[in-house]
View 1 (tube, rainbow, N blue to C red):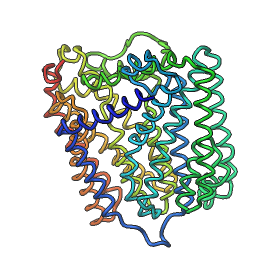
View 2 (view 1 turned 90 degrees about the horizontal axis):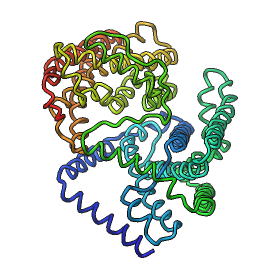
View 3 (view 1 turned 60 degrees about the horizontal axis):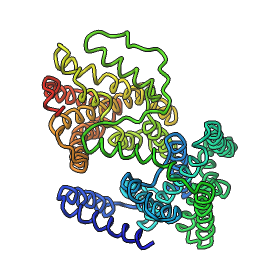
View 4 (view 1 turned 45 degrees about the vertical axis):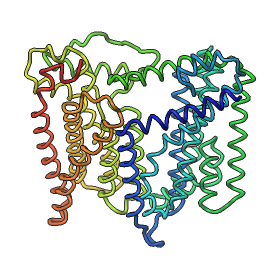
Length: 518
């Protein structure tokens, strides 16, 4: 045990020294801390009579925890889950230590990492404080619950993968049981939606925040504990936390007693994690692919010249089983629809603001960025602007499909006219073009920087600066003419023109492979 304590202390010490020796990380940390402080200091709470019902907050907490819990277990059943790095695999596993102590070390290490994963929740304080009266200690409780949910999901995935790794039938049974649990929860929610259109949403929120869904495994328990803290109920907190602790203890006992040689089951996951980290350090893009790929029809057989890149990317989408939308995009769509339901009396403005805010995080390097790492796009004897357009076609199509899928149901919820729906779709497409152009500019100017901290900091700063003119233009036009469609259309035209100019100025990035350090 002394060896594990020494290892943990030295790891913490080395991490602190690594931060001190890299000024860029300190600058990024100070910037993020300043943004967090700014959002908390300038948050304004709505009057008590204008706040949203507390049940909506509990429902959102439960849905967030449940989505994280189910998604992590599903991913773990397919690719395995591991708390360990390759250094642990090489040095800790062969050490003369009992598997229980090694598992305890992994649990403690993963608990800290899980809290860091939920750091983005702190930046949601402003609107949570305004709409629901959330205080900093409440937000801290939500963050801790989120971290514990991820931790327990990964522990559950590790246990299930260890028990089902030797049998494909057992893995399919575990997936079926997980889907059955989700379907059962959905069936329990359906009766609340039949109280009528006016009260259906409020009834569903109360049902999700009620006692029944508090017994949903892990997600419901942690939501119940967080709700108990916010309401000041000590016994509610203690009861659900004891249930959670008993579940974690049972999983640990299951892993160590039934699968004492669990080392072999985490090797593949540790190798995958190491490969992803190495790819990031070297500036490469590594795509997550399913274990079994169904080739279907082989060969591209469509397109000429640079247009082949578009059909090649569509083929890669089909084989990756992402089709047009990946998991992150679907999550953001569902989250936007939920916010639209909760805010439908305020019109489309909150939806446009919130969806654009989330679009900032969901818009990243698509398949066009992967083409820059291959030599073929540079060897093709066509104009650079034409090649740049064709390798971005897949990202443009995906953005258009996402905009239509988001705003058609949202428009029906808000009761918008067809012209207003088209305006909202155009507004989102304008920012999709702008963010894509911003990514092209970043790749052109900063493509040689492999420091992920510096790159992400500059990425968000540049995209935020790009957002300001289009948003201000839409706000000023709406204030002057009170015509939503006109302001959204002009904002789209402005963002599209700026995006085209940026892409045209950066077209030479496909003329010289050295710009991307191949």
